[in-house]
Image 1 (spheres, rainbow, N blue to C red):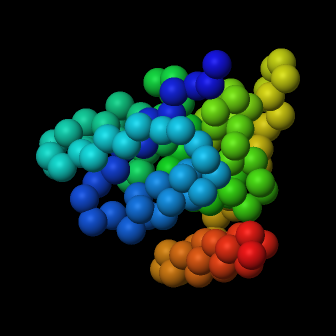
Image 2: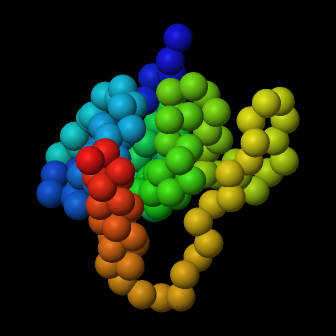
Length: 133
């Protein structure tokens, strides 16, 4: 039985769109919840103690957002969202117990725009397309 993956998104959010595309390419079954109301967006970010959208939640536990999903994809570990093998981004620095192996979170980069992350995402998607051909 696979875990329930939910992705909370905002309208016209490029990072949300990229996360949805990565999950689809990895054949992760998920439910998208588009949150249009600003008050509801604020309530969700407070509830999950998240900085921004998208919010990836597995079985009611906030796993992470764009950077964490991109990091999992880069490590070819994205498929673990459906198998319970991914720890929440907030728990990565804590010692793990049981079978789960901690995943190193993305390291903070010097102040710069998100275009560096976006170009890495586009490059990995291009490489994935090339491999399929």
